[in-house]
Picture 1 (tube, rainbow, N blue to C red):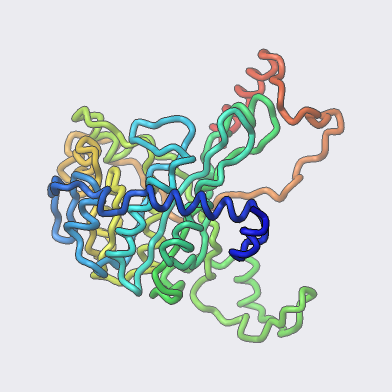
Picture 2: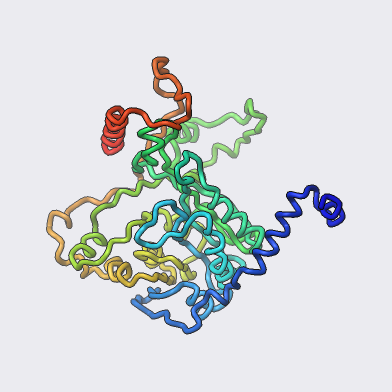
Length: 396
């Protein structure tokens, strides 16, 4: 086997066996066309002047309804590969790439060469272990290696309001920190999709405003970077980082009130408006077409509509789409109380504080957990720690 592996150009027997395994997997995999429903059952559910909600399988839409090279931005949050099953039908982490392949082929079919694919995807933990699944990394590698997508840039959506989870490893055994970041992959069919970061500028910091007012002396910084006098030019705002600080705290509002009033299910995994708004402003022009193939309650469609973009959302669950109608009809809130109507909406300039690491003094009386959390602490102590952490997080 060693000789044969070398003759075929493989460094080790392990590489050769992996090659044989992958070849067999590819032979047994169904093509994207096999995954598309044989009879088109997708139905138009709701329409506005700019967009349409569809009820049905998004593979049906990608291969039977949408035209090739017709979409400027696919902005979506597919079901995550989670350990615990959710009501909206998430996929097992270890089978995630196989499940996703037909969608990847469909995305490539409908996306323009100048367009972008943006995928918000959360991480997962390996069952019974304080270690992470690699499924979301395997997904982006698959999209690049197998389907020819280019990874333009990864973003990280930090949700400051996230509860300290996973509770077992964060609150009980105290061997991990709060998991509060989703990865957002920005991909494209070519290395040069259209984009303009002047559309998404952030306010200057106080120190930068002071520098603009008092001037800056061009010089070389200790890092070796040469900062020219152009650094002191006011460009109307700062280029934002790829860390997106957006709290996802909405538990009441037009959508939720409408669902409760009519008995419709509330989608449990909605992303906040600011997330699709950031990428729609960044990567599309007015009149461009935005698609969310895992539409949920159609947040993407609502934001696209408000920004004068054409759009389509596809969702399997008709109940979620019933509630989504409230995002487009002002009459849906007619039964709200006056107190709710008079609530002031939060401004977008909300600032979130990120403490520097090790901001609190070291407590030497807290020894390391020598077994790495392999055994649980006493139940009373663990319960007390959980209650304190949850209360503290709620206050924040």
